[in-house]
Length: 481
Ligand code: BG6
Image (cartoon, rainbow, N blue to C red; front, side, top):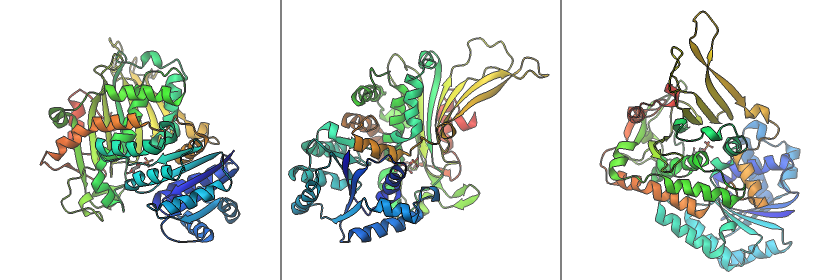
């Protein structure tokens, strides 16, 4: 199969930090279809060779195991081309079309790794230039809008040029191997499904914790905040994968229909429930991994006195027969105690405990990062002098180890899927809009609330109000269990 991949934003951060390393890994592992060309597009003039040299230099910043040696880079570089384009000039799209038409690849992927305000103009121009034929797909990187209206506007313009099946919205969490494993766990095994419901599950926690701060992205982050950056997309996508009904097939739309139903079943927030069930925080100076770090307001490019949240914890409910009354706690933040992304399914305690000290609930922990695996926590008899006292033990499945040779990174997987036209791991416009619809009352409530986000010291697990919120239901966050 032949393909052309056009990278708009070809000199930007996303391209050299994530996309090029992922494409190189796919190339190195022989997974990239053989007959391919990768065309980077950006504003300034440079030759193909100058672009190749630029990418080669940037690879120095990629972790060493994923860096090409000179011979490998030379082979990979033969796929790379560069073109200067002014994204608002129709003639530049006509010239791009001529270049692509030289050989008419089986598939053309237009990857929009640009600032999102350019999506409408690029999509409209691609459509006008006739670069939207059935073999063309367009990939849209987040952030897709900053609220429902702006997301709808982007979707409207995209739909003017591309059908829904041609428009691939990326949420890179869906490309993580452990997230794909969630479907496998639930729908490839009969073991958990009978327990996957309110009768057996007490609560579900989704934690996406980062130990890094906002780094050099202070200006972008300050306009965005943790709710838009992580909850509206990554955390809600994980929630849909956990809570969805079994789809009738493994087809993209069968899956996405079920995910959409979950989003539509989420209990809407009101100003009162935002005050009670959503906690926002902002990090102050502290210590992470033994190193003193600055607070959010001291970071570069963060405006003085900013009220942007770097932490959110919230309590959600899925209002349907399966999940009625089961709290879903979602939490994310920068500069937290550790880099850790995981989902914890806390099962209900036994109805009538007969062993001393055995009231602790069993739990299943789905680990996304830093390790990729599954832990099933059970109680077992120690068989020691303590008589019948039970102790917690856990089964630990390490997928990195079990499938080491097979594992591919999130961007590698999503790029290969985009080229192959597999849509399962991309977000449909109605899912994305529904997610905005659900978070919007929180944005409105915060906009009308003069109170600043709650402070937390860098290196902790967020403001104490986060623990107090779950404690109201008699729960504790995973790291405190
Ligand atoms: C991005 C956010 O979508 O996800 C970043 O914009 C965040 O702020 C990143 O750091 C986290 O991704 P990962 O894969 O490192 O957990």
